[in-house]
Image (tube, rainbow, N blue to C red):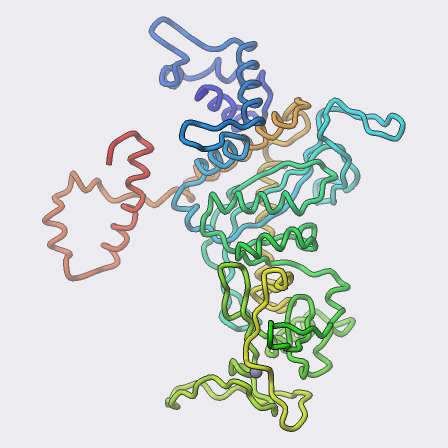
Length: 490
Ligand SMILES: [Zn+2]
């Protein structure tokens, strides 16, 4: 089994291929030391499977993964388990923990099998492949193709806001590891598979909180709802018609708070009329400024519940703006300090005398009502810049496709499971290549504590917690994992 896996990863890594002949050829050329460790070389001589046996064994593996079996410890051993176990092992643990953002995108995987039309129906040896549409890129023409879509979640940086609609910060810059990959028919709806691979990615990167996806996914409620229920933030673009449409809705159970909704942002009904919908034909700079100006009035997310519901707060009650309306629920008055920030600026508002800014300061939206809400109001420079993290998915696709595997003929099978296993192996090989780059290696561990006069060192630094001791201690978190991996007992 180990030998088969090594063969498949090598084929993906060295030849961008999932072909059986390539796996067999690479195993035949294994370094004797490695072959010995894997049991393919014994004192009695070489013990490699013949090409025929190899094909049979791989077929058995694929059949078992497709069917799924219960292992002794209760885990279901199936394709999802296989995929996530291998992908998790291909990403360094310390990086996986750091990942908070995931960029989702799909790319076409043309089938090797040909197809024809008989009586208006498509006939092909590949029973899963279907016709689909591929959007053009710089290297490929757009058009109809026959095959599958590969949906990928690629690790990306995390966006952090500080309340300024013009700026966004980024942290956790991580290499574009592929966190999960899943294949569907080319013509299948993308929503469900998108959800599946995002949750798969979350199993590998447990701190995943931000998802960046294009409108192929985000215009589908069945994509957004499960992710919002799991309290993930979705960064998205908005269709043109949604941007031009503002509607008044009533939200908040028992509160009946009327608000204006536009492209996933919420505003008071008294917001100046010129800020309701985007004026036509604005220059890029004026466009950004209009959104930044409007975001002052936005009800902003202040609280998230584990079930995916969010709390939004009125801009005036939050003290971000001041209008002639009475404040429904003013923030507690703090004793004025010398350096305290000045009161919020008085802004224009369509309010009648005696009117309140809102009905009780906050409203709660359920995961379903949250549909298009984003961490930063749509259209603001902060939101636009944050959304560029989605480009990381293109790096993942390029790494898997234009530079490496997934080229015509990479896999000549017509079986869906064989193609899926092959694609997983390509992703694993791609991740291993990233992890192997010198710049992505884990910082070197301090010298083995067993060899250094430990007690003396500790007394010397005790009482003065310097940066040096802090960094020296950190890697010890991973010690048990490393020990388990090398077979040592901790
Ligand atoms: Zn208010």
